[in-house]
Length: 150
Image (cartoon, rainbow, N blue to C red):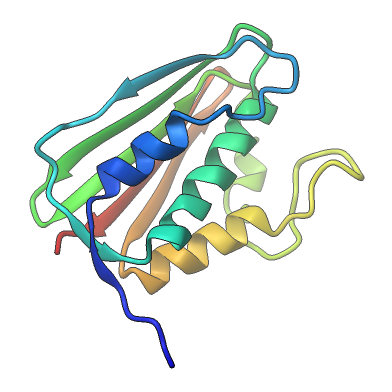
């Protein structure tokens, strides 16, 4: 028996994840939730979408110094619902930005990253007919994900 996507109030999923204890590795991270309460639902696999938030938020926490700030923002954009995950960490070096979605590519030290997290994120976004973009420089990285509305 196969699975099919269902109409998913992704705000509930993102709220659920962001309400959890995010592994902060001893860092005091400020979490800012800026959710558009009127964002429409998307068609999707809730568990897969939560995997996206898990990977991106854990990566953001890894990149941030103690006292860092993580912003999760949602908003409608024409026929899409978009999510920004923004951190004030070290940024992704420009020369690495074109490779971050490659399987087994990592900027983390040996033994700290597998290099499959962002590959998985990209595959899930593609499966949901969404888009993902990156804007990164030292002190500010934003992943923007946009998914078609239901």
